[in-house]
Image (cartoon, rainbow, N blue to C red):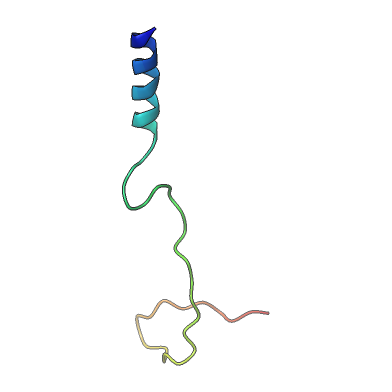
Length: 48
C-alpha cells in the first residue's frame, strides 16, 4: 500500500508545475492612457 501511495504522489508531483507561475496563461492587460504610442510598442485597439 505504501508503495502504491508513493507512486501516485510521484505521478501527481511530476504533472504539476511548481514555482512562481502555476499554470500557463495570457498576461494581464492594463490600459495606460497617458503613455504615448511609439515605434516598437505593443498596443491593442481600443474597442467598446
